[in-house]
Image (tube, rainbow, N blue to C red):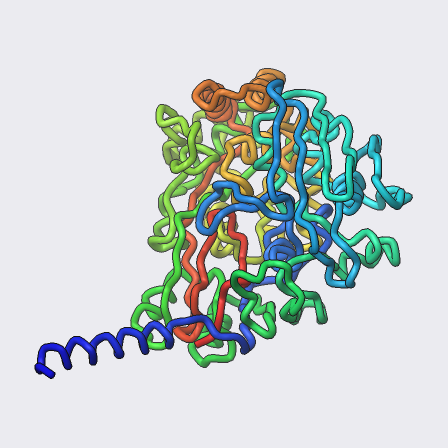
Length: 535
């Protein structure tokens, strides 16, 4: 045998061995380090990413988003049909799927899961007719997305077929049905104790709920009976650890006591690059961090010049340069520049102290005189769109002091912050929040975040008739090019009226230990561990 043939055979054996070594293997525990705890684990009623990242592994929806994309693929529905008028959606469901409690997934479970959020429950079951309990609290996503004005009825027309009849054409409807709020839950588990289901979640996903130690950790275990046999889950357990301090979380990553550090300090990214035991996984952020006003009270509700003064007073570039440190870009629109419908003609607010002072005088408060101390609510946890809400709040307050506005930074525990902010209290003037897109559609930003006329659940509570009409027009227009023009007009209106100050879009970078394999960031900031394995 020639030396050349021997060399080729040796290379072939080496390549085969390398392939075998690279194949996913089962076992191991992934410890995910994050900045805060979940608020709850009932996806119909939560709104925060810390809750959804756990839900993403417990539950599934009728449709799913592909890896690293918002393109749709079948989820618990194998296929679907839409009538030519765009008002009837028929979903064919997977058979043989079971919930974690052993009960069957079927059309009645879909009717129950989605129907429980309806204000007027126009639902029809195929088999057992569940008596859905009255809502204990408002399903915020459902309400803010005007789903009661969209879905007319839900009917199980067979054991594995569900028909949604819409009241109106809703262009983003199918994409919306892949969002967390539309996850399918076990009716049996929910009915055992509806009030406690948020702490005892049961879905069909690749991992099952085991334990929740408040403000410490949530433990999930592999679903050994998971319906999709083509790939994972491979991990035995996933542990979501709450470590509020960014620097402490990163030190635990370096020490190997956690396997991933979500939302590190930007300065720690360079340290991670130099560490041979750590790799960086990144994704362009489909997000926005913003500062808004309490539009339910004066002077914010009607004083445009005051809102403009604050917009020009805040040095957003300095905030991005010093606190995002290369992981963000100054925002001009409240949707990311990678999203269709983005308005390139909107210039963004120029940082100009003299212009801010002039606007403040026009507002009736020259040099801040007559304006009492205001509160600037700042987020207590790092999020994809905001690396450090408290430091950013301090920077904003310092900027406002330069034009004569005295702002006091206020914060609360994350769950309390979200609850109190939603109530629009009198003691809140300005507040920081942000958003990571759920489905890649501009409606998911522009309607849910800013159209206060659509719902009292919209957190900014900006009421503008022209804007409301544009958003409705966007929902009910099927042609994407026409929708894009509608949203560009809406974005220009936001710039002109300043209901919100767009601060930054961030690049999401997660340092992970080298032994973590096949972890991928998703544009929606969904954390999916089904295909992750440990080397």
